[in-house]
Every structure is written in structure tokens, then in C-alpha cells.
Image (cartoon, rainbow, N blue to C red):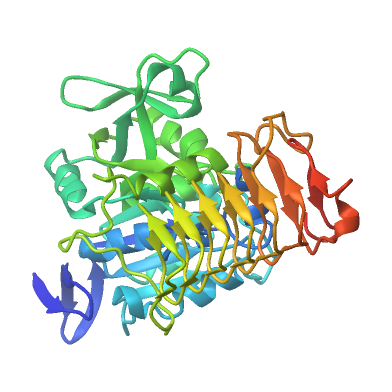
Length: 444
């Protein structure tokens, strides 16, 4: 066991040597970050879900990456696919997470052309299968599979100790969910020793409320065998194919019950709610703990400027902001400008956005680099069902995609969606009624 003091955390990992050559990692992580996140609507029209801003400072992928480094895992493969540019730029060579290493560290793994064909990742397990060579070079004993779109803190080293103590082939992190929501998850039935006796993938009639979190530890030999055996399976997925295959052939599969904070921010409602929870008087998810820091790439920005006309109550304000208006119960990203007379309440305003004088914003999600003109009203009126997609644009939110332009003196209702550079002519009588949308050509 070797302990190194890295740039941001103490790294603990086990290596084995033959002569002077490192030949084995005990455990590596594979982080699935290629998802579109379509349920976030216009927020992910230009960016992958794991790269969406969160908490005024971070991006969603920062949380599993920080969990890795805080857990002593120094080798992480990040599998990207949909709109990867910002994610690639954010991760870089892994310096903020102390993952810039000669052997190991962080590697971004997009799909690539092989000698015989060129394949997109067609499922979570297919994405891992296409990177068998990457994993083989580290000859790990264990492989940790993670999703890049959840907000939580977990010590994976404790989960690995649990995996070893049970001599498990697979350990699945799981948490209890309300029974009425169980059909949305992979559900596990366990015995008195937490060994899984039955696995149901999104069952109509769930037999348990113990839900898979999409976090798995595999013995590498078990995972490699399953990936190769199921390599021709269409849209090969862990919950639908790999886990049932291993379970049916008698592998030892255990549930590791987790009772901490865990949030799937896959909908606009859950994303808004998770941000709002950060500004509770006693937040259920604490960003300020010294012993479990969340690391991120930080730009060099000046400090905030708060004018004498400003009023700020119970809000997170990012670096480089210029605030002259009123901000209440909101999360404001870096470099945001809120001019005098503007009001922002119960909203998320992402970095680089400008809110002009006199504009009032209520319960809205405004993406990065948006320009909102003077004297607008956003998130007002009676709530109506979305005409674009009621499954996505609900919760009473107004949602504006990145780099959109909103002209002065318009009113925008609830359950609305806007993406692109809009003009006054796009708004009938200067109003976008609740449930309506404006999505410019090329912005879908």
C-alpha cells in the first residue's frame, strides 16, 4: 500500500510490480458520460448531460470524478459520445482532480474507428466492451462502473471492502426508494446476507423497493467474460443484459445498501430541486465539507461585485458576478450580470448570462451565455401543459437554452421552452403564453 500526497487529495492505491515495471492496478473506474440527457430539454441541445452546470460552480460530472479521487481511485476512463467538446475541455488531462498521471490518471474515451468497422456506443455495456483494450492494459482485479449524471458522495473504497468481504463477483450499489417509484429502476430482492436472489429491470409489479443506483463493482475476469459473451447483443446494457446474464450463470451478486444523498438530475424538475436544496439553511447535500471536497476546473475570474442597489437573500453567487438587482433563493453561476431593478427569485442562472435592468425572473432555469433584455417578465401567469413535450417541460418552470437572446419587454409563461436568438416578432403581442415554446431552426 503506497500513499501519495497529490495536488488535491491523498491517493491510496495498491500496485503490484515485476522488477521495475508496474503491471497491475487493483481497481480502475469506467465513467459513462456519453448520454444526451434528453429529459433536460433545451439545456442539453448543445452539451452532454454530465457537462451541464450545477450549483453555480460545478458541472455534474465533477461529483463522480471527485468521488473517485476522494476514494483513492487514480485511474478513470471517461466514455463520451454525445456533444463531447465541452466535456473534453472541462476534463482536460485531469489536473483539478489530481488525475494527470503517467500511468493511470483520467482518459477520455470516445468511440473510434476500428479496422473492420466504426461503431457508436449502442448501450452502457457496449460502450465498456469497446474499451476492453483500455482496461486490459491495467490488468485490474476489479472494475468500478459509474454513471456521469448523478449528484452524490460515496466512498468507493468502502464499497470495495464490502465486495471483498463477501467474495462477490459483482456488487451493486442500491438504495431504498418509495414503492410507488420502484418501477422506474432496476429492483433487487436479497436474502439475509444481502446476496441478490432476484433482479427485475423496471418491473411493472416490483417485488422490492431496493433500487439499483447504476454503480457496480465487478471482478475483472467476470466482467470481461460477460462482455465478450454478449458482444453481439443489440444495445447491450448492464441492467437489461449483463447483470441478468451473470446472475443466471450463478455468479455471486450482492447488494451494497447506500443511505446517503443521491439524486438523479435527469429531469428539469429534479435538476431544479437539487440546486434549490443547496441553499437550504441546513442543506441535505453539503458542498462545504473539508473532508470530502468536490473538485472542478476553475477559470481565473475576478471577485463578485455587489452594488449598493443590490439585495441578496439565501442564494449562491458565483465568482465574477456583477449584481445590482434583487436575488432571492437562487443559484447564480460565475460571471453573471444582474442589472439594477432586475429581480431573480427561485431560479437557476448559469454562467455568463446577462439579465438587463427591470427584468423579473421567477422559478426559471436559464442556461449559459443568455442575454435577456430590459423589462421582461419570465415564469409568470397561469400554469398550462407544454405543447412541446409535457413529459419534459413541466414543474411550472420556464427554461431557456444556452446562448439564447430574449428581446426587451416580453412576457414568458410557465412550462415554456426557448432556444435560439429570438426577436420581438416571435412573441404574439409580446407574450409567450404558458405551455408555448420557441425553438429556432438548428437549435433542436
